[in-house]
Length: 444
Ligand code: UDX
Image 1 (cartoon, rainbow, N blue to C red):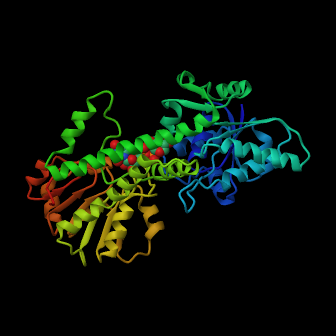
Image 2 (cartoon, rainbow, N blue to C red):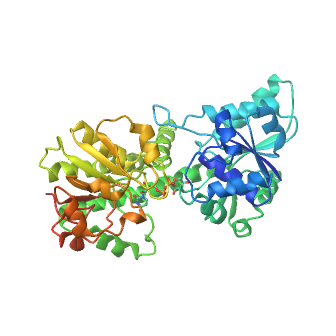
Image 3 (cartoon, rainbow, N blue to C red):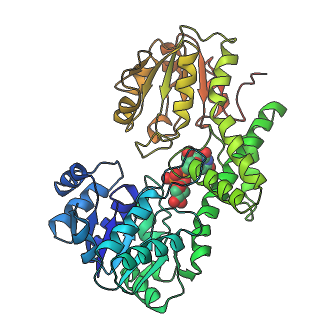
């Protein structure tokens, strides 16, 4: 099958590469010529386990190709995936200019029947706007070509994107066209197990499913963070509470880990966009607003613990930081709690010595010239002589620590753990103060 993918960002590149890997002929189009040149040379702009090898192999086999030419891209695929970015507008709603620009490109260059597939996370009603845009351009050209627009939202987790694409929980396709259903079945047919998980629904239901899934997951996290904050004040250990409630299958163990707040490119933006969509149709989404507000507050929790641990005076202190990425196995720092923390520390006159296994380059790009930031080679250097250690990301490599050694490194025996990596008793036995989320030493 011939498939065109517009956008070689995270979603576009993973989608294109995985589809090429099972034998489809894939052409990825991007307006960024430098990015395309690098991709053709097998260099990928993001960190995603397994992706680079897969890109190289499929480029080598000739199944995965790249272009910057819109006419070539539109002519190529029967399926035209739109996988460009939908960044938030100033008001929190998704900015559709890139999606609609692709729709216009398709309308401008198409000469035969196409199926347009919305892969980007887009507000409910976008498929209709894509359809209108293409119809408008075709009318300008005096053409009357048939085409369909369907919604096929992605559910990829960073760090596990290939696994999610090939073994995901479901594939959602929003369409009422039998032809589109047949083509989408063909597209995903090589993934035999996914075939059974193919769900067809109305286009608006598909669009809303994506937002509802992310908002539900974000709700679970904010709920747990709220209970953790409460547990802390009540002298209860949130880890015991977590195990206690997770054992109820109606609640489940997944996504109920308290922490220093959710970040990344999806949850913050999608929760806000859904709340905005609700507002647009005259519905005040109370819960979504609260999920977002709790998360904002939670991202400030590490800083407020430090403020209390140092009696309000962080001026001139050096804080060692383990983990910059918003979660492990990625170099992504979008909306990461580490950023909220570092910015608050700098404003309070403190210095940061930070280490992350993958996100150092990204941090340098974001804050490189900040005079109060030192990016160090390993986790040991980050704590040498620091006044406290703060953990922002639960990288596996941080889970095993010699606390006697750690105590000897730190100028003050303070650990603030935003990910509850350790048993409080084990840490405290070495004379360290251990402030975690909903457990550990009390700061009240
Ligand atoms: C998410 C969805 O999981 C995915 O299905 C969707 O397509 C895109 O958004 P991603 O943003 O890559 O994926 O990250 P995810 O692994 O879901 O984590 C999101 C955030 O929640 C992270 O900051 C993580 O640290 C936090 N989290 C997750 C918690 O704080 N507690 C948990 O129990 C789980």
